Length: 109
Image (cartoon, rainbow, N blue to C red):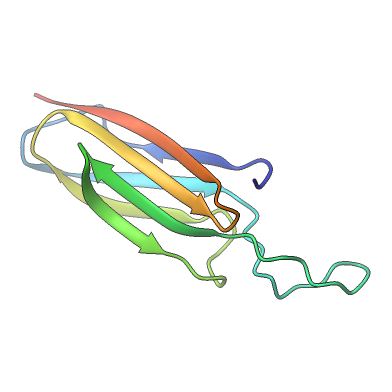
């Protein structure tokens, strides 16, 4: 498990039924490509977040596969239509199998 991995998510607390909202996510992660060398000349093992997903009440909103060229601390901003009150579940999966998750509730008025 990578050290100091911190997900941050911003979702409005409420919306109107059918409203399209903007969701912002960022995960603090070093994202090592596996192509750099350490001081002794040894390759530093690859360690990246290789997949990011977001689901709303169990239905996929976005599913992203990431490659080694992704930047450190990957940031995603996307939109989703909110038909009802519910829960967004955000999941980041690391090369080593570690999973980082966050959830945010939204109320439909």
